[in-house]
Length: 376
Image (cartoon, rainbow, N blue to C red; front, side, top):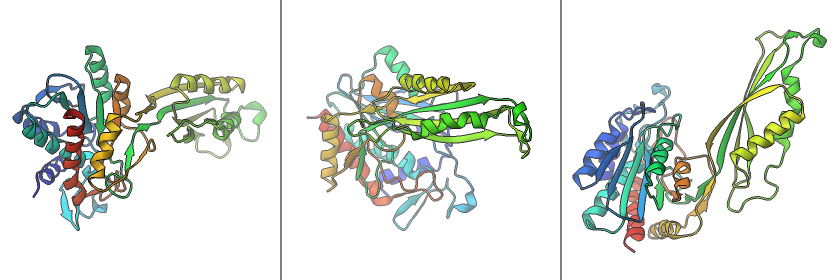
């Protein structure tokens, strides 16, 4: 068995359902310490965060990943136990195989090989891991980024190992992400009998014109280059007592915006609260800012990724699609951020897997990127 297979197997076998790290980072720290990395733990609450570095100066290349996974769901629906990794038909099965213990294992093997070949390399090579990517994402990389900002920790380039690929390894590379803003809007009315609407005030009816305006709006009439347009989606609507003859007194509506750099969270909040006020809606809105959009322009990192994939015969689609990643917390530190990882078709699903051929190729790709950036 290859080194990357053995490590991925060991990581998947640890039941690290978010935010539990289940010993994954301790295993990785032991290996990296043995080859000369300095290890720093930045734990907060129940969340484990690991910062491992090799080198003393800039520039700094950081590989970013997470050791936590989503729950497996019903075990009986899996072909094999989700926390007993199984290799069959050219794939490694198990929860986290693609998202993202395969990439984390490839990071570690690539780092070990790099420092063995270049023990006195220029710059700093780093690995940042958290156990809070699949959960609240409060005490993980968001927390670490605040620590880094406070002490002036430099990161020039950051490569995130999220499963970015669509059909084949490396066919999609993320060079940015939209921002994410979630609202929980509680609309206040007056409860009453459906036969006497004059004695009640239906909050659902009151909210509908506002929601229709928000849903029907073109949020990006002038699209931002390289970004999907800003989108508005209603996620949950809760109201009523369960009886068909009662007008509810309140309605709770959750919606999310994934937004391009044409907007900021503050600008969206002001715009939507203005619409709500204009309609005279009695409502309280709680906002959750998941992260601002970021974009990595053409430069050394994108070039290094492109060249590393070219050696595999792959020409990637470099785009900003998809959801969010922990890269959104590192980009504001001034880092260029690119995401490159395995095929994402099975992530968060039953029988999650990674192709063994892709797992075997990843360490060499990551090592080439490091060599292109630090040894040029």
